[in-house]
Image (cartoon, rainbow, N blue to C red; front, side):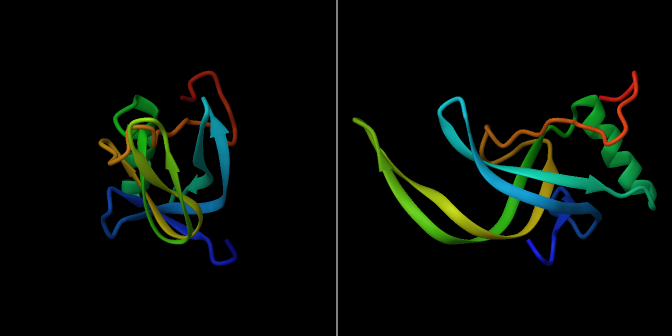
Length: 116
């Protein structure tokens, strides 16, 4: 992620931070995209979005990316595509994700008793 990805407020033009790193990991038997991002503190909208994350109003992500490698998985009932590698352009912090598992966890850089 040499260029870094943008962290956006709900697919708007409001840049609220940057994606520092991403990786694919497994959780609960499912492979998913895990990101590390920083939220800026220069503008009012950035502070407002951070507060929405802390309060649980924004607890999900939606991505903008180009898949580079796609796989196909099947069980007894259906088949589906899986993304194995991608070029990540932006991640939006949202209140209603297209994929219900696309949730975020709050992990402040400087934890305090009031954090998250």
